[in-house]
Length: 172
Image 1 (cartoon, rainbow, N blue to C red):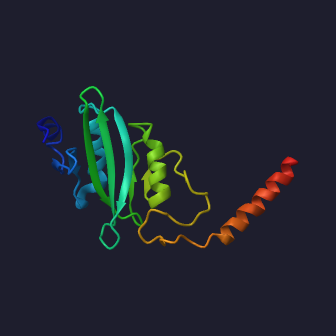
Image 2: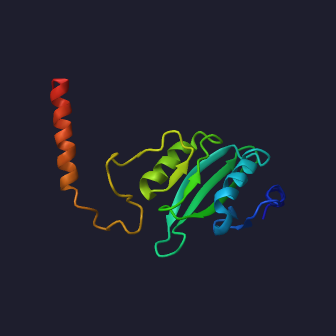
Image 3: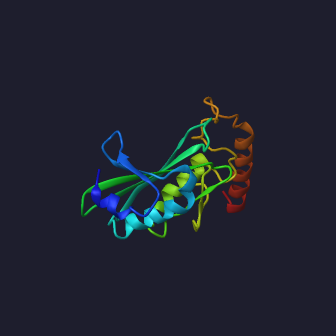
């Protein structure tokens, strides 16, 4: 375990350990996740020197409360270090703080996480679907999404009708 990181986060409520792949894991307990997550990430960005957010994603733990593990992975290019921050969120009633002001490249990871899992990011300037159509009512990486998918016929008919109108208006 990195004593440097432990010293930086000494005043925050978190558990620091080594994850199964050897990456340093900062675990934000469920009771304090919302306020503490942002503080931890700001500390890692500033004094910690983690200049890159490599990804933001989630793990669906259907049947457990809170339902989702929210994962932020950061990298310090200068120190050649990685750190993973795990917090817990119930996407139906909570949101997570956006970090796009700290790491602008995280904007797309947050949008993907919103699109696939339905997790909202408070303060995100452009939180909208990234991969799925805007009117798609589901979040495909949730474990309660049907394995065989959904019946897309009604959705496809609506898209086709819209495309036909757009093509007619464009003169195609």
